[in-house]
Length: 391
Image 1 (tube, rainbow, N blue to C red):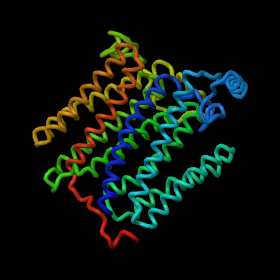
Image 2: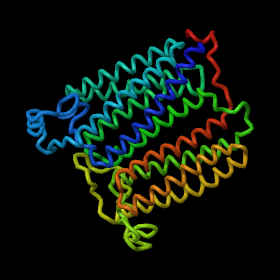
Image 3: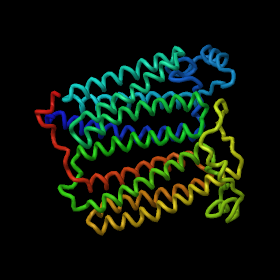
């Protein structure tokens, strides 16, 4: 691996991570503004590459999709989100190609995976769903094979692995539309976006040389990993809350927090609240659960937030005392900001700006933990030996 290639990987991974963060924010804006089904088809929007603009096109769109009347102020958000996701996909593909360039079998697998993904989308648009799904599975499996074939650990493997994740994320975006905002798919799409951002951010941190020169912080690495697992679970709970329209299940205003519906023990239905798979063909826009089930989801999300707050608060103190003061402070600031945004969502009735920021700060909190993890790793991402470069 030449110094020039390493420099390109460092810059491209950073650019892709920043772009992915913006995409997470914009995706939250689209979802929270109820624009997730504003384009009833995929990847086109009412059959167009962009979205209908002129009166004739709008009339044709309404006739083609009578159950989903065209709303211009929402359709552009969904389709722009798809364009941005496609742009990130191109960035990730370039990153994977450069990372695997010195390993012929891995490079060919990455190229084949990208080709299969494109052909799969084309077949889906023609209605060949079975063949499209088969190609999509191949498109995800090939980058995984390429990542395994790379002899270099760490950031190089992650750069290739991210391609498989973003292909699966595209499928989740398709299923979000075709399965009519099915909660498990919507939650998965959110987690896929966060995972893509996390992988790119971690690769950028490792390429930037954030890692430690030795194993003196191995014990901290385990603690940070536990924090990441807890935070990931809490993000999943947040996604489940949003997907089931349970953010205001306890009402809003003074009686909604710390109480729920002005009660310390409101009516709840935990069983119905956490049924992950429901029927296909149901339109989940606006939610299908009763108030007791939504309240159960909201309360579990709050309990998870308390657990994460206590653990990450302790972890930030621990990191600061062990010489990672900047990382500890960053985690603490992001953590407190996230909690305040969550409370503000409930208190003020889920303002769009606050709810979107709540997603963004979750990603920032994730980044602070990833930075701490990278700092506690031993530095071993050295350039690839020349004897391995052409295998």
